[in-house]
Length: 112
Length: 149
Image (cartoon, rainbow over all chains, first blue to last red):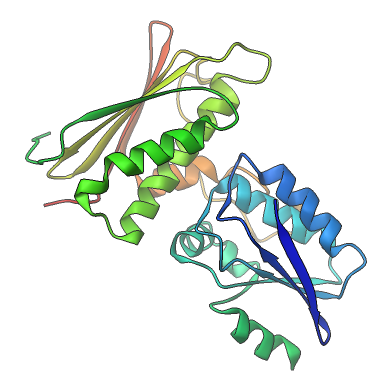
């Protein structure tokens, strides 16, 4: 699981480089997120624009990452491709996360 | 079902294991190429089948049990894709599929569900879901209303 992390002002942006977050890599993703976000900024934007497919295991891993960050921090999602957006919408998990269509939109909104 | 498609019924067999689901999904989507599904429809097929196959790899052939075959048959009819998935692993605990109710999200962060979405997605996106234990096999059938005419 390849995550790229960078800081932008008061935000941390974590970009997933893989095209799938599925059952085969869900645990690896969870561990990589933990390593990338521990001790980081309060607000983390997870850039999913390269991710073409996610299943319920991948969804669970993103929820686990949010839970691990704790209540005082925020995990926002950006750049959801059609199938990824569908999974969040159908499970209503789009009401639990802040979801932004694009990374630029997320950065503009969250920097203010 | 009435078969009016030019797409012949096709069958995929994979051996259960860590990458079985990816392998089966790639073969399935490849087999469906003649239908020229749009990204929305292809995503629905991939998602439903990913959840059905993940369940088999995880529960029918759990770690510690010998691996076994997973057979997928896909037929195209006027009302969509008719998919049959057969495995020779353990049966459903109660002889039927889980209800697949929507998860309660009105909870504290620490109680937010991390699982249990699979059957919800299958039952939300697929029609006519049936499950039968036949001899020592699990037979799951479902219909996905894409490429309907």
